Image 1 (cartoon, rainbow, N blue to C red):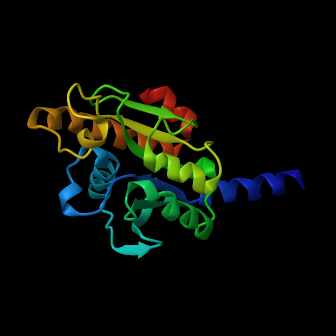
Image 2: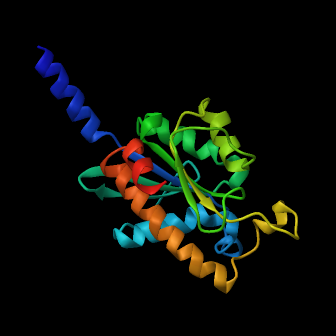
Length: 200
């Protein structure tokens, strides 16, 4: 009996959908903004794995597929950053995604440009998209990948995040995106602990 219970649990674990959410703002005018680092990671991840953003649900643009035998849904909320939770919560409900299988990728002013940091939980750190998600799903207990965009010396943060990366910054960010993609792949195939051990 115990073996059967364990086998059923293992099968359910293997079939659990991984929901990978990249944060950003919709529209061509925002596509290269610093605040759209989450979208930029997902676009590169989808290209690498030949996934297409070809479906719209709950104001989210979706790409679906399988990575390493695990079902994966990539989501770019098109609700604008400060309403990201209104996309994430119904997506989690529809696809029965537990918080341990939710991974959110977003820009972080408090990390140096190009640095990535993986965490299993935590507060929003002033990020409006994360504030919205936490408020909507009612917990801070879910994994995330923070992408460092640096903190500005001149312009206020709310202006800085809506500016595009410079040419030199883009070179640094492409390395960050590659590292973030590898971290997402590790999360999908293994778990957040393994991902933290390898990529922090």
